[in-house]
Length: 198
Image 1 (cartoon, rainbow, N blue to C red):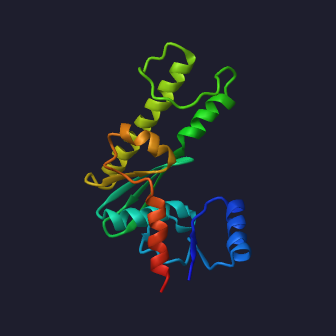
Image 2 (image 1 turned 90 degrees about the horizontal axis):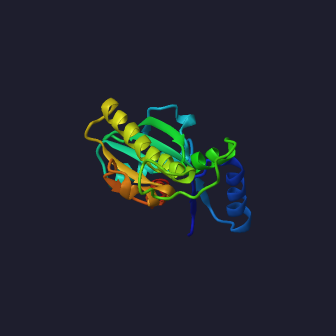
Image 3 (image 1 turned 135 degrees about the vertical axis):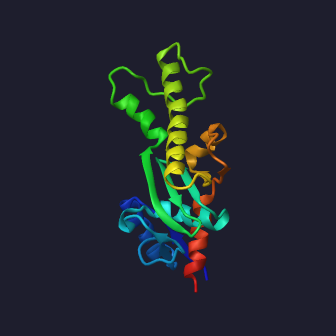
């Protein structure tokens, strides 16, 4: 029998997905949320932790083990700490690089809308060059600083695992990442499905 497993943190989209599986496909589905087996002990405010963060934590702890810091470069940039005993401790959330870039255009009077590019230098000689430098190097620095502080608070030996759509672009420049897995969320959904299939 075919089944679907869903993790979504956007309520209108979740409603549409549930209708799609229930009505259009008549397919049994599992929504990741409270009451679903994950194999994790959540030590943060469980009702406030996004399903996407739990799914990534399940995947990373199953695939890599040990103490972990998971960095998801998505719409938001999230950082999660998970112990070797599969305890989800919490983390940090920052605006994603795309949101930050859009905010520069929308919330300032004269800055243009630009695409993200890898700058040749940090000292931009034009407004666009300066924006490229600030966004690119700023996000690399943001990631490095949050990871370093989390290691100090939690586990200096923690393995740092990256994922997320923007991570495909950024990962090779992030010297603080030890592993990059672009399909981490999908792996987590598969694992959670298997845990709840019996």
